[in-house]
Image (cartoon, rainbow, N blue to C red; front, side, top):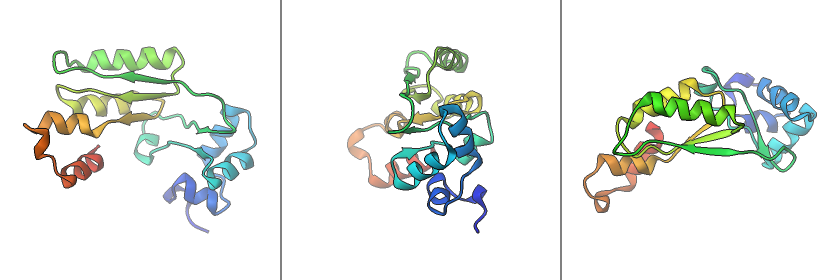
Length: 156
């Protein structure tokens, strides 16, 4: 049997392995762990639990047909204002008020620094929009290449 810590949630579910994250989600959702595993294996549920984020403060959650409704919050700075502390305060407020996930939509300043600080501090999954950072880094969008986009997705 494969080491569950080296598998994605989908891979583990399809190998009939109930991971610690599935157990956590089952308690959080008041569902049976086997139902979580089965739904993930069928592609009807996802557990957005990036392994790097799990090493920080992430508390696993799920999104899917059998789960509770989820709330997403959008935060981010602009090219005019760019303060890490402001974004961390927005994150704290969003999570405190019940956000299950947060999208980081910064378009200016040190996007890498802000994204890393948000992920370090966040107990919920964080989504990003790599295109925003690419647009900041290039002078003309017409110069964008597919490789640049792929590189930024991997970077983030």
